[in-house]
Amino acid sequence: MNAVATLLLVTMLLPLVFAAIILFRPDRSAKGLALIGSTLSFLASLALLGRFDWDNAAAFQGQASVAWIDALGLRLSIGVDGVSLLLIALTTILGPVCVLASFTSIRERVKMYYGWLLILQTAMLGVFLARDLVLFYTCFEFTLLPMFILIRVYGSTNRAKASVKFFLYTFTGSIITLAGLVYLVWWVSDQSGVWTLDIGTLTEWAVRMPIEKQALVLGALLAGFAVKVPIFPLHTWLPLAHTEAPTAGSVLLAGVLLKLGTYGIYRFALPMAPAAIVEYAPAIAVLAIIGIIYAGLICWVQTDIKKLVAYSSVSHLGFCVLGLVALNTAGMTGSVLYMLSHGFSTGALFLMIGFMYERYHTRDMRQIGGLASKMPVWTVFMVFFTMASVGLPGLNGFPSELLCLIGTFQSDASWVAGGEIGAQGGTLGPWYAAAAGTGMIIAAIYLLYMVGRICFGPLREPDNHHDDSGEDGAGRLPVDLSAREILALLPLAAACLVFGLAPNTLIQGIEAPVNETQQWVMRHGMDQAPGADPAPDNAHARIETSTGEARP
Image 1: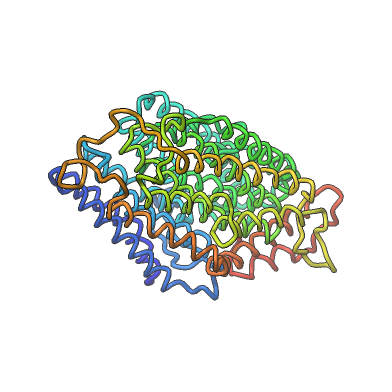
Image 2 (image 1 turned 180 degrees about the horizontal axis):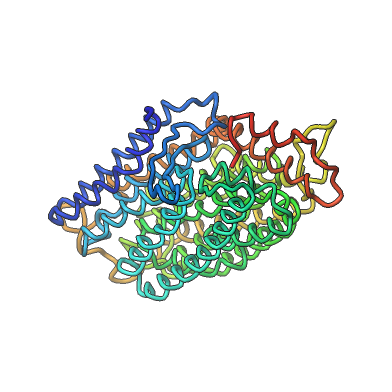
């Protein structure tokens, strides 16, 4: 096993090991152990970023495989390219941030809370490093259990309904996705005579399916991934789950868990059903645009700050999906960049709301406002992260939204240019981009209105808002942010600033794997696209040999 593979396993398993240790230790040590475990996993991911060959970011590195059930030829395989590695880094950054943010908000069943928080991190990491369907689907599905428990046990007053709705929506979609994957495995086995669950091998064979069968597989995959994103009209579980979840649960839900859906579309739906995705990209884009505008308009009438930010996630992730189905390098690069930037800025907004709620026990903008006079440090961070979410130039939200819209604008029917794949592949165009662009205007209005109401103007505070326990000598939380809370926010603020001023820091690791995936989708999508010329006989070979394996 090479060094990258070893670091992958260490990064993934460290939170699980510390979750097991917490189980046998007293409650008072749970916080410290959880912080140590999540921090060590983050440090391992930093070492992984350093050992990764970024000049060859399109290839899967650190690949390792062990036999699981020999009788069925099943193996557990891992490996990462540039896209999945950056999502792993995002997950590990949010780990210690969520632990730090929970120190004063969680006072009962402490061991259980931190144990499930670490288990959730391991499951999410497993999704991004999996190279076979067994490991991928096991981790993808297992994320439901820790999040269900975090919402059900540690959530707000309506937590029972929120947890059940979350579980039923996501579990039902995942079962349909499983059916589609099983059908794909069966079809490949019938065609090739080989039973395999290897993602690369399945992708290589899946593109040879007739478009009718690809459409069935695409529909099944989207059933699970679209619910997880979520795409309109499958979004109704998300605002309630966000609103009722504990602060750390909301951060991980927005920062990582929703990205399992967009990552699944990128890694599975696009390369495994390229002809179907080319055919149905306009319909998916319309649903994404409806979600962008509809959720944005709902945000206008919200008085609950947390619910407003929850609906904004539905709107923002519509840009992610739109960039993916633009089917060109600009749009898909912007989509992956958006997965990362949304995790930083929206995750931070949920932290800010959680810190405010600990002090005032309300999220109602009608009861609270003008906090700049009492919480100036909190206000600085709140305005900063709101500007990042709005897409202010110089912060991380701007380049990702811009690339998604540019990719959508350029996406037309110009698939072939001089006999080669054109950069402007896709079936959308300027009207799609113009419609989606209105979502940016709507977002600016409701986010700036929110920050204006709660930060500026005359001070408004609910009665009896002081906390009974906290970090200072008087036994209550300080009026403004504590050093611990500032420490939790600083990494996210730094990421928003650095990746806004120098987006190429991320784009250089994203562009190569995205470009190969785009070429793979358009090359094989052309084979069966209505009215398209047949692809040359060596099309499969030209794409597959570029990295030594099929591009999933």
